[in-house]
Amino acid sequence: MSYGVDILRGKTLYAGKCMLDLFDNNLISYQYRQHEAQLNLSLQEQGWSQIHLLHSNCCPCQNKDLKPLDQNYSKIKLATVAMLCDRDYNFLLTRRHSQMKTFPKSWVFPGGMVEGQQNLESECLREVQEETGLDVLPILSKMELKVMYESIYPTKLEDNQYPIKQTLCMFYEVKINQSYQNVTIKMEENEVDDYKWLSKKQMLEIMNGQTKDHSFLEIAGIYPNSYGSGIGEGHVKAFLHCYA
Image 1 (cartoon, rainbow, N blue to C red):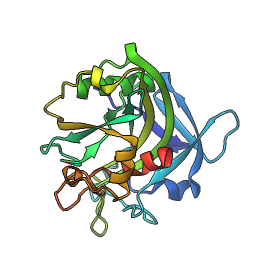
Image 2 (cartoon, helix red, strand yellow):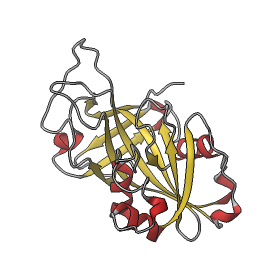
Image 3 (cartoon, helix red, strand yellow):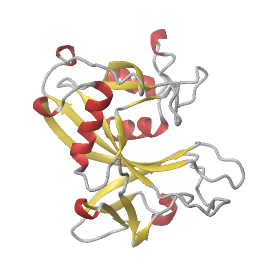
Image 4 (cartoon, one colour):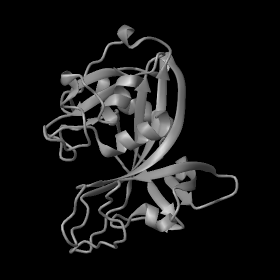
């Protein structure tokens, strides 16, 4: 599998610098060149699409220029994320398996890394099917890119520690034309160990810390919460940006 999508602002971007620092603006222009496996970014470019770029309130790379001790720089990777919902805007959240190397036990929307020279929308739907067993395409009602988020792992870095992984996540709204009660989820058990369908109202209450339902305590809060779980911050920020 090739994760050969280069993210560029004139030249290839590498982990260790905050992308928002590079643009000094959260509204940017982008152009995806599928056959060249390139996502080009610019502050403002005529003819390109525009989108908001979000990141953590405590971005560990902000105002820094971190370098690996072995000089082995890692490219910033590209991922797609599906804010999958049914016709009534009930959303699917999945819990990453506790054995995952990054963000174990976090509740997230389905998604994953983009393979080189692939259509972004197709990659997004492929990840949904891989993680949940759900073939979305025959029941797809709407698919729209809503926002981008810069994810860095670990979320807190020691002095001069280089990120293990820095990813630009493209969040899509993926809406199906029927009720979630009529679809079957078959989890990819090596990656996902639980899932929940939640209404838009429940999602907003959980993400804003307003839920009174004790069955949602493990989910509530930014990952990692006191249960070692919680919702990934990027997923919270992306959802609130789009639906609050």
